[in-house]
Image (tube, rainbow, N blue to C red; front, side):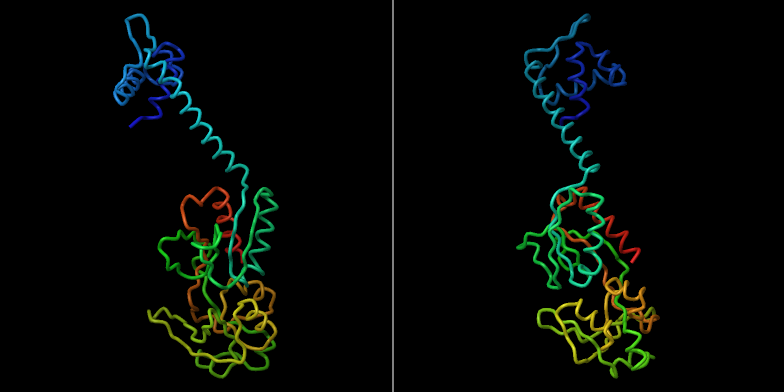
Length: 299
C-alpha cells in the first residue's frame, strides 16, 4: 500500500535532485528518506531514480510518475483545506424533522440562535408527532424521543437522561387537590396523547427497588394526536398530563405547571438526533448536535 509520506519524499527528492536536501526540508534523516524512496519503488515495481555516487536523476518512469504524484498530493491538500474551512465556516442545507411540542416551543427558538451564529446554515423543518420515514422522506436529521429501535440508524444523544413527569396547573391542583400516590390518578382527568389512532392510556412509572415498571391505566375526557395540544390543555387547567420534562421545562420554570409526585421516576424518554449514514455527520451536523445538547442541559 502506498504511503503518503513516501510520496512526499519522492516529490521533494525529485524537486531537489537530492535525497539529503529533501531529508533536511522534511526534517528526517537521509537514511529514512532513502528508505521511503526504496519502499515506493518496491510498491510500484518501478525504478524512479537513476543513482550514481555523485548524482541523482529521475528515470523515464520516474518523470512520468512524478506528474501523478504531484496531482495526488495537491488533491489531498485541497481536501484537507476544505475540511478545515468547513469547520471554520459552517453552512449547507439541513432538512430536520422533530416532534410538535418540543419543536414549536423549544427547538425552533434554539435554531434561531444557531442561525444567528452561522448564517450560511439553511434549515428546512418538518414539525409533526408522526415518526418520519427516513428511508422515504427527504430528511437529513430527525430529532426523536425514545430508544431507537432501528439499529441501522445512527443516534447522537442530546438528552439521554430525560424522563416523563406528571404535571398539572396550579388552578387544577387548587380545585382537585394534589396526588398522594399513583392510585389517585384514577380519580383525575388525565390528558392523553394519541399516535396512529392508538391512545396512550397506560402510563409507566419506575422505582429503584423494582426493574419492572408500574403501569397505570388512566382515563379522561380529552385526547389529541398533537403533543403540544396536550400541554396547552394542562396549562389551561383542565387535567393532568404525562409529558417529557423537556417539553414542559419552560412551563415549570414559569409556574404555569407543577410537577406531581416528583419522587416517582417517570418513563425514560431520551432525546437524540438520528441520521442514516455516518457520511451525514458533517461539521455542521456536529455543531448542531453540540449546540442542541447544551440547550437541553440548560432547559
